Structures are given as C-alpha cells and as structure tokens.
Image (cartoon, rainbow, N blue to C red; front, side, top):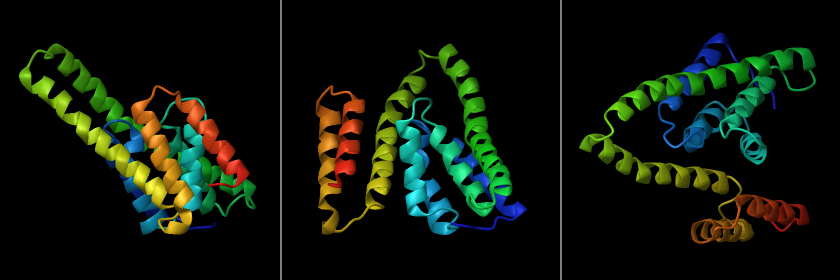
Length: 198
C-alpha cells in the first residue's frame, strides 16, 4: 500500500496522537477505535489488515503495551515512503512516523500522569479522589470492550466468520472466569490460526 503524506498530514498525525494521549485511560490500547477511525477509515493511510497486524504483533511481543503505536506510525511512514521497494526513503519516513506517533502518545499522558499522581498522592484521603478512582473502572472496561469489538468486527461480521466470534466469546469467558494465563490463550489462538480454523 502506498500513500502520500504532506507536511500538514504529518502534523495532523502528531496532533491526533497528542489528543489521544489524554484519552488513554487504562492504556493506549483503549484508544484503538479512534486510531482505526483516523488511520484506516478517514485517511486510508493503513489497510485493515495492516492495522490489525500491527496491533497483534505488538501485543504478542514482549515489552510495553504501547509498542503497537510505534508499529502503526512505522507502517504509516512505510506506506508514505512507497513501501519496501523504496527502501531508503521508506525507512526514513517509517522512522518519522514512528517518532511522531510515539512522541504524540507519550508526551501529554506522561506529563499529566506525573503531575496528577503527585497531587493525588498528597490528597489521597479526599472523598473526591477516591470517588474518581472508583468511577474510572467502568470507563476503562467500556473502552477495552470497544477495542475488542473493532478488532473482531474487522475480521468479518457475518455468519461465515462464526468461528472467530465463537473463539472471541470463549476467550472472553475464560479470561473472565478462570485464572488461565493469557499466553496459553494466545498460543491456542495461534495454533487455531495455523490450522486454518479461524
């Protein structure tokens, strides 16, 4: 996939990740639906498969959860550089995309978290601080459900894709009701995909 990004597009990418950074309650993964809206639906800078592949790869790799943002920015830059055919230019644009997306997603939230955690710790006995912490739990759960819905629906929402929906429901119940380690579920999903069942 090849796209063309102007300097204004690069600034828009940075600005969007700066704004998403302040909405990333519960982690950057909760902002996936809006990232999908901008990168895939609105600008077509990424395809659905590139978007889902970047998230899946980053989630399977060891390291911080936020690495999927770097992969999304990398892929946008790679597409803007003409793909792997133009290796030198593409790698430069990929580095730019990765840097802008990571700077955007990390800078505001890190600054706000540092300032707010210092204040909340100093005022931890206030009723408003305790109520805020308890009130944010359902918001985080709702954002994670929306993320799961976007990632699953992009794979197919019709009855022909019933194995994906069954697998999603089964894994959801297992995570909710058991203490089964997530790596076992990830491995089972990889085996089912390798066998061609999902």
